Amino acid sequence: MNFKKAGGDAVADATTIGIGRDPLALKRISRGTGIAIIAGCGYYTGDIHSKRLQEISVEKIVEEMIKEIKVGIDDTDIGAGLIGEIGTSEPIGETEKKVLIASAIVQKETGLGVLFHTYPWGHRAAEILKIFRENKADITKVCICHIDAEIDYDYCKSIMEAGAFIEFDNFGKEFFIDKKGREFAGGVFIRDIERVRAIKRFIDDGFVNNILAFCDVCLKTLLHRYGGWGYDHVLSNIIAMMSEEGIEGKDINTIIKGNPKRFLSV
Image 1 (cartoon, rainbow, N blue to C red):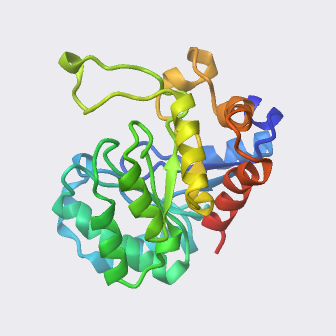
Image 2: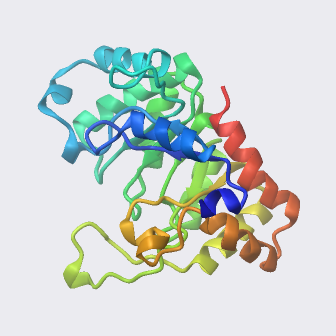
């Protein structure tokens, strides 16, 4: 309950098909804690895509995603309130492209925000945004996640200049992975203070309305129970760090409250 004590009142659960999502558990947790939980829909990266997904049409994917939003997920009455986290690899695979097209169509029809998992050290946002433009989806409801493992300023600015959000979501991940032991990671993870200073730089460049700041709690080691900073890290620690680095209260409020509300609202 540290998250709630720190002032948190809503969590986005971006767990999608094939990676252990459990809508009934979300409902149970939400009722037990009083915290709103927004469930996602769609498909993650190609390495977990089923043979069925590879074979079905874009139209069928659209139909199934719309059902999860308007009717419910997995034969429940719990509807998805966001699209994603839609997974893309490096490079983007053919089935992933099919899901991208479907996600764009679903976004256009529902108005929901879309979270995109991109390879943290990759540069595939332009390809994603191109598909969304071609399908007349709303770019201002797109968020490119994980841009802050290491930060490429020009790449991030190009995303925001297009009208999309970038998401600083690696807060609490301050670790180095030896090259000999890397299977997934193609680089290092910078420190939280560097992330905050990057946010300050982007605000100074006029992009305060295109920044989201969350904790992507995707590892056990990020939880308090296992020695991590927990779900409340941004609220309990990063906001204070932002203030100390000269980010004004109104801009912190925009990033922590205003932008998520705008992204998730329909």
